[in-house]
Amino acid sequence: MLSRTVNVPSPSAIALALALTLPALLVGCQRPQEAGADASKSAAKPALLIAPEDLTQVGTSGLVGGPVLTGSVQAARRADLRAEVAAMVLQVAKDNGETVRQGEVIVRLDSTAIRDNLTSAEEALRAASQSLEQTERVLQRQKTLNQQGMTSMQALEDAELRRNAAQSEVAAARARVVSARQQMTRTEVRAPFDGVVSERKVSVGDTVQIGREIVKVIDPRSMRFEGQVSADRLGELKLGQAVSLRVNGFGDSEFAAKLSRIDAAANATTRQVEVAAQFADAAKAPQVAGLYAEGRVDSASQAALVLPEGAVTRQGDATSVWRIEGDTLRKVAVQLGARDDRRGQVVVLGGLKAGDWVLRAPSSTQAEGQKVTRVGAGAGAASAVASAR
Image 1: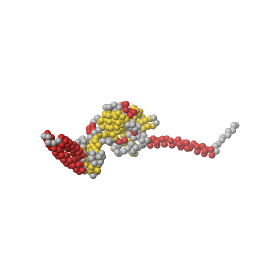
Image 2 (image 1 turned 90 degrees about the vertical axis):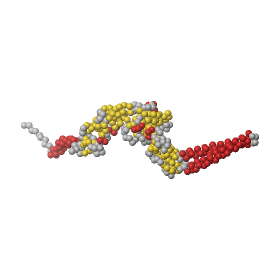
Image 3 (image 1 turned 180 degrees about the horizontal axis):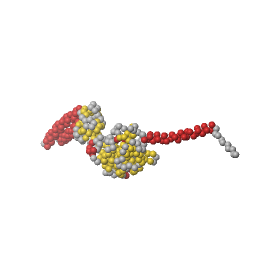
Image 4 (image 1 turned 60 degrees about the horizontal axis):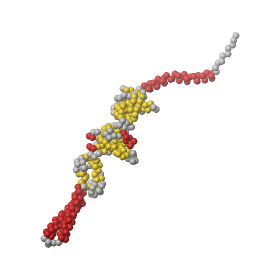
């Protein structure tokens, strides 16, 4: 008969084995439940509130790659009126922004002292004229007496000298009168042309000296762009080229213009060249001088789909946008082309079509397939969420 030896595990070994296997069994049982909970949580992702200002539409635009111009809107016809006499300001007839007609008085200066000078000059002219008449009569008598042999040639010559001196005195007196009358007219500062007062620099009671600036007048109908361009791009410029301008204060509106002047010398410090461009439609041009403006010369343009650069999400070399498809948010990969620094736009080469709506400023909270809810303007933002109902 054969005998068999059976090894029975000790109680401590059995307890150790149970301690090692039981947690694994528990984990295996819990994983399906946790996976189901995660799926339920993803399905319950809150809807994204979308207001009109949170979206931007893919559109076609002319992306201009020509030289950039920076400057301001200025009136080609403008005048800086300065004091031509030293006097006190008595009246300011026009204020900033008011229209003026050619020859209309804008500022009136005190003319008391100048009027006295004019009166004195007129009296001096009257006296000189009387003296001239008297010397003329004396000269005629001397000529008659000389012909009769009753006076000497020396007396005749002396009479002629006195007559000539009187003529000189009359001429000088007339010049003083003309000068005084001119000074009188200079006490009234008049508009040199039809326009608008752009800057008034004096008030009633001010004392102005000769050469002090009093008022500026511009003609709003002569507005144009005056700016600078880098000398490195000078070779791309030609008179008559189309220019697309954006003016501060007019939003995204663009103004068409044509290059009308290119200076012959560059600034020695900045290496910028002064240029000017005339608005294509003067009636629609900005009517305020001094507004900052920026533009591009249409020397290399192309029509393409464009999108604001802020709508693009970047992960390494990959670029994508969040497109709205019905009531669902989708992440779409896009291929980008050239960038327009002035407009802050990029060319879309692929992934989107004209008319697509995308998030203007996406964040990290969006999720693929997330539902969206449209709200009114100002009622939401791209990052606002509401609980799904």
